Length: 240
Ligand code: CAA
Image (tube, rainbow, N blue to C red):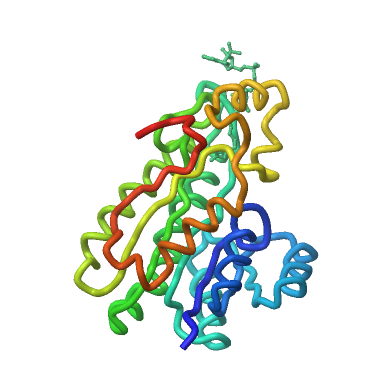
């Protein structure tokens, strides 16, 4: 039986690459998205996947998205918590909205989404939860106290949940991508981005497909002994 996967933020960027890869691996895949209907519809059409709209920062949206996926595709076996936003700015000028939005979407979403699927996974004694953190949750980044805090929080969540569910056939892992060639990274001021790329030993931005390959491994049957890990894919920019 094909496994069912839900990838939040799955219609663009890293998320879309993950969706494509899991679909190619034979899973039934749904992509979550929050705003851009046109992009989501195109993604659904191009890839032949289900899309579900909702804000991962809102518990009720996550509940209805998970219910819709389960009704259409079956119980969710693989959850990829990928949706994320930035609201960069130095802390001494950051307002509570910049802080709150980033923490809600990047970190509260782990509670909001994972809570929808964990009981079913425990009952079926199989599950894969993969949280897309960031290099900046590991090393910090000027202009990202909000994002770095949320992304580091994802790593703590990953470890605690992995411990709670290790005996239930459920693995919980985090991936910490470096700077990947997405809209989010291209929004960094050009001069700043130039400096960042100069500091990446491999000498280039990463590709969404490179993150997707790692997700595909963690989501598979053969990764049952990998849990509580944070896997870094950053071109050597930060070695933890
Ligand atoms: N050390 C200490 N302070 C620094 C600094 C440095 N190297 N560089 C800048 N600053 C401080 C300055 O002192 C200045 O503060 P004051 O004006 O109060 O003196 C403040 O930063 C603002 O500097 P600027 O006016 O030059 O810039 P800004 O306010 O327009 O923007 C910034 C600052 C938001 C940090 C901007 O440089 C930026 O966007 N940087 C990129 C941050 C980044 O890497 N984001 C990653 C996005 S992609 C992503 O997040 C994906 C992922 O997971 C990797």
